[in-house]
Image (cartoon, rainbow, N blue to C red; front, top):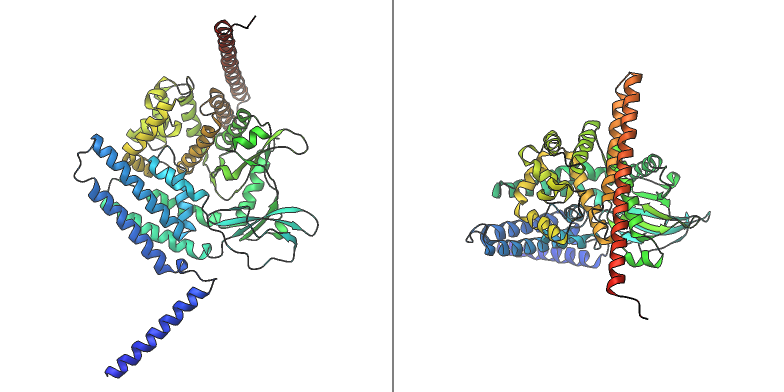
Amino acid sequence: MARRALKLASWTSMALAASGFYLYSNKYLDPNDFGAVRVGRAVATTAVISYDYLTSLRSVPYGSEEYAQLRSEVHLRSARRLCELCCANRGTFIKVGQHLAALDYLLPQEYTSTLKVLHSQAPKSSMQEIPDLFVSFDDTPMGAASLAQVHKAVLHDGRTVAVKVQHPKVQMQSSKDILLMEVLVLAVKQLFPEFEFMWLVDEAKKNLPLELDFLNEGRNAEKVAQMLKHFDFLKVPQIYWELSTKRVLLMEFLDGGQVNDRDYMERNKIDVNEISRHLGKIYSEMIFVNGFVHCDPHPGNVLVRKGPDTGKVEIVLLDHGLYQVLTEEFRLDYCHLWQSLIWTDMEKVKKYCHRLGAGDFYPLLACMLTARSWNSVNRGISQAPVTATENIEIRNNAATYLPQISQLLNRVPRQMLLIFKTNDLLRGIEATLGTRASASSFLNMSRCCVRALATHNKKNTCSFFRRTQISFSETFSLWQISLHELILRAKGLRLASWVLALLCWLLPAPH
């Protein structure tokens, strides 16, 4: 019996050793791809983070200065652990981590700043086979993301193309990863009932299958190009359908500098204010007028350049996998809410926040949408730009009110969640360019709201007199906005002339 057990143990050891050697020597197999390894790593990380929060803050009085300092340290440790987990498990984990990193004004800064590295640390896959349809194919990807990477290539007919190739195992792992996240989020909710993060899992469940279908991405690209064709400064790559599949997308190659690359803009004499205005027009039109919104405008997906033929400034919009389609009811309520915020009609702010599911959290929703303090919202967000002090206050409040923010995110319509992400990504771009919260951006938004509401009202009336009345009211409102913009510009010019006169008086020219 003992001899048989020894024999069995010897054969088992040899099998395990041989398996280990094969896995180690086979460059195409990665232990990180095995379910047990991925699950074990995710469970262990979640357990360590939960234990840290439960034990580290237990003995410190809530609301004290020591509590705030200690909480910040726990946030930072936990964010680093979460980032390591995302980098190790890759794929879906990196995608969700990037989503969290984009919520600059909704999550503690320790998390968003730490997870931002996931935009530049996406995995790269080696290309095993190069199809015969390319004359040349650059093995080094121009860009790598959580789900795919993009290569530059040249076709036999001479066209230069961008080839987007899905990472090999993402499709297979994604559904299991989402199920794992759902179980872990439910487990964390048992420990911390005040935190509601099921919205994050729900969004991943809904959007990930769409993002993994590159034919869907191609259809989105064509739809937005047609929808915004009146903007001659917007460029969307043409899709080459005859060469595309669900996992490989071929499109027109368009180059440019990233929208946050100020050095590139200075070298190419591109005005940052013009870029900011163009970006505001594009997204106001998407959200308020069409209800079809590109929800991943991080700097790698928004390029700027001078048009090779015209020499005019152009914006190149890439990666059309993630779009939010807004229902008409939501879009109109959202229009009304922004109109109320811009023109400081606090009764209507409360009314439309309630309609969007905020309930008693309506001041929090207003602050989250505008990334302004409640005092600024009450004074009027278009009256003064955000200050550095206010920006710090908003970021600190994200940590202080995290339980309330997570509850609110669980209450509002699911359409709002990607809008929050989009808003925060756009604010990040504006902050980098130094153009955040300019009055002109609010006025452009207001124009789109007026047009959207007027179009809806005209569509829902049969009376010629009523349609004429709505058209007159729309024209008058747009004229008021233009007049307000003109007054603001005049004030700016007058202020500039006063500053110049003061400088001339303080620094007289040498004789």
